Image (tube, rainbow, N blue to C red; front, side, top):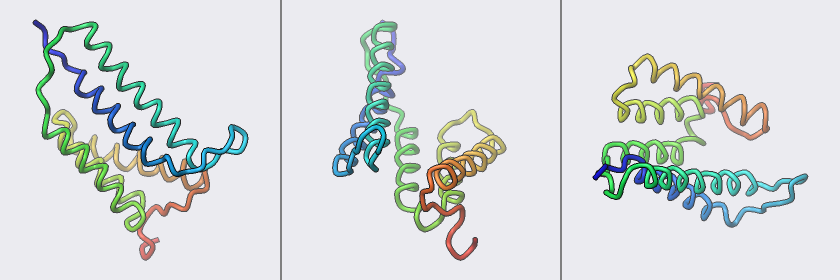
Length: 148
């Protein structure tokens, strides 16, 4: 029998999408030409749920029937990165928050070097700030209020 590698990950991705879908249920959806604050989270959550199920389904069809071993370090790392964002994004700014979250993820991914993690964290921080602050006009600061 073959070991399933992506079923657990796919189901976890779907679970994360479901959590965010439930969290967005109180937001106004709006219409396609006049989108409300709930439109983007709901659409993204639905896409995440579907993608997770597709990943799990493809692995079941391709490999076999045994459930994979749970990678506790990876699950804890992703959970900690999400918690960092939830707790720090408003106070620490997007640069520090993203760098901390990517640093945690870089630690649980053994093949990423320190340089790769740093470059990814800094580049992603700037990209997110440009998209959300400049492109969408959301009130996100790059650094904490006293530093900028």
